[in-house]
Image 1 (cartoon, rainbow, N blue to C red):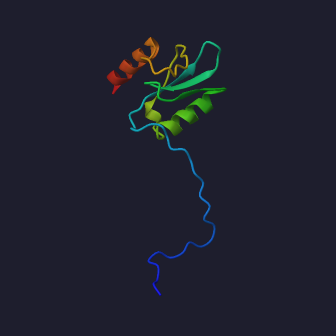
Image 2 (tube, one colour; image 1 turned 90 degrees about the vertical axis):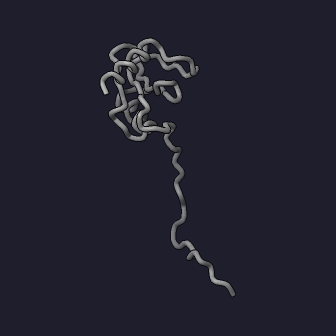
Amino acid sequence: MQRSATPPLKGNTNVKLVEPPSCSSPSTIVFIGRNSRGQWVAQEQNGLFGGLFVNRAQAVKYALFENGHHPETIIELSRGIELDMSGNKPAPAIAFATSAARRAR
């Protein structure tokens, strides 16, 4: 009779699976702002992830989850931002904000 090297699991073995953040590096910039309809938008600088939200708090919460909880990489835009998940180059306002953020580092 052989003994197992690993002890058997005891108690509750239920595991809650959580979707991992989409971002692969802590330097991922996420823009938040309002679109032309007044909805809050959060979008990664290259359009890898994003969404529409009913309030700023939810947009920030989503951005923090997706960027690995790095508040320093969230930029709130004073100009309008439209959600674009096409994968094309970022809108001019986003491109401008990205270059300004890089200069500020």
